[in-house]
Length: 440
Image (cartoon, rainbow, N blue to C red; front, side, top):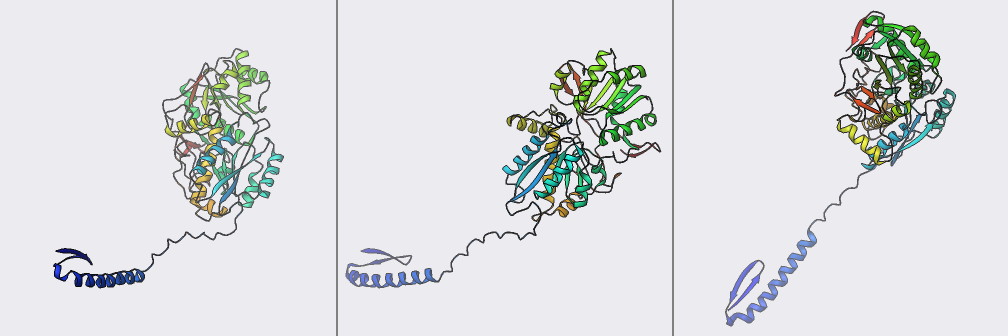
């Protein structure tokens, strides 16, 4: 007996029928193969996977199908160079991180660097060069303010460090939210309340001659009588920028009987003032210094800043137990950069904010869509680097929204800057003409 497998079935045949079975098997196999072949030929071919079609975007400055060009502008030279050291590198680091993930909507980001030289004329020249280079927009780390009218008129988006335009110009987005410096009658209570806790009763309020520093310190001077518990015994609004002989200022502080100082200016200027105060034998209960974040500065000051109250330019200080800050510090160190540089976090957050704007602007970003869509963002945290949330929605105390009213202070002791255990919030913004709290 012979078993034959045919067409999915098993047949058995006797010896007598083996020959005829073989013939039948051959015929049936031929039919089966023919049917199978016909079926295979009749089967529809699988449809090819469609390739993604490129989005047809309108021509926009700085934008191509593969990349988008933006610029960083700031003070790499001039009196502010030391204060803003590391800012451009911080911005480049954030751009590199985003490009490593594929960029924004498939476009890699190119970052051009422009040095304003801490000079109004040079800043305008550099902005004109950036426009000629066909950049999409700018992120900035500078205290020089001559460029903002040009950027506003051209509708060019800009992110960056605290200047009056970030509170008023629709195209300008501050790293830490809307600034109030365009309205000097608005003042934040946070730092003065901290100084009062340190025992300040007679305060000298000092700044170098820049628009942003003058505006913020004028606001503080206006706030002192409203806040109560202290008096302003000295106001210096024209301290020389950068390193200088501050003997005359120290003598004025001494003669005024000040027990505390609040200083806003370049960090080299703060060192000069602190050293002169020490030389005059003045003991202060509180010395608040904007931008004091790098322990290396304490070594340079040779003990003159011991006990100073450090403030960053808006970000949480390096050294706090915050994951985003630790990640930033590690990445900076891996790149051979100094994470403690006061402006490096500003450059990083300014670039992050610009990247946020590109993301919300859509697959075909334009300058107009960047501005309009970023104005809808109500909970921005600077990649986790800010001590609070920022709203850019233009429904705040300023045309551009509200500022952060939190800060993370540090204390200088020896050659160490020790951050507070947690961020300090609960500050208020007061209209000093009426004494009313307008934001808290």
